[in-house]
Length: 332
Ligand code: TYM
Image (tube, rainbow, N blue to C red; front, top):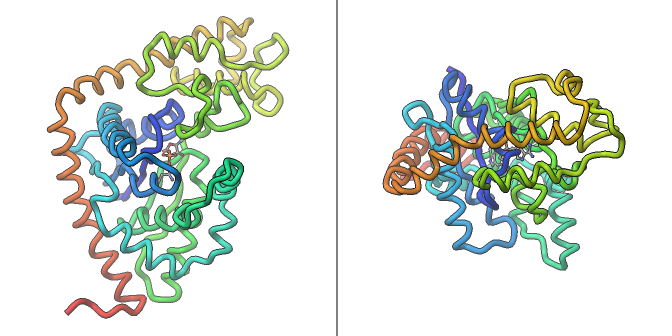
């Protein structure tokens, strides 16, 4: 059976981008067709300036949102990264096959490090090694498929490279994984800045739809989305990125084709109105289920406890094998 692994980082409230680009597919498809693990990757949230209490809060919230979005602990394993030591254990060994040049070439590192320096801050070493920890997340479980939005493809490519290199040098140990992207909404853009991704850690609140936004807040954000000059509704991501983003979102929510949907509208206003309602409807059951889960914190904790136990058992043999293969003496 195909092994699937993916994760979400608790650096901010989950967004419509996380949902349409990743989580929705995990719930609708991946957990049914495969042996899947979904992880709240809290160690990754420590790679930038953070408030410890907020990271804990967001980790709990992310876990209950994954369940609210439809992940079923009977079908898949849901857990928190720091509860399974194997991730950090394997990360160190993979640092011994990765190069610093490779790390410095990562687009997300370059962007985030530049932003950090602009703010006058320093760049944490863990931000540089972030993709190695991510590779450890993936390789520890013998993962075949990694369902992610487009922004993570380069990181998954690195995990592939490290797996191949390790296997060549030290003997076959890791399955070589591949990224899978959704066919629509693989990159949902910020409604206020259609040239940038809708990212949960970004500061431009009005351009980001959060999964827990009230319906009226969602409507307001979508109605105020920046569109392009011109009147005709056409799907042209290069020339009309704001409009294309709305059409992508509408298509992802209603199951249509962005270019076809464009033909059905003769005004931006009508398109925005329908997009807003489509988003509200897609998020409604998630918000409702999340509210129920908030009243039952014990349930979520139980899921995470069992998930971590199961994940530990799945990761340990591979990580132990990697330790032996690279030359470490087994414990006596
Ligand atoms: P993160 O937390 O940024 O995002 C979680 C998932 O949501 C997708 N995503 C988007 N998709 C479409 N449009 C957007 N605007 C958008 N924003 C986010 C991401 O592609 C991702 O699939 N490094 C990862 C977390 C991670 C991971 C892993 C993922 C750590 N270890 C191992 C897979 C496997 C990240 O920061 O995702």
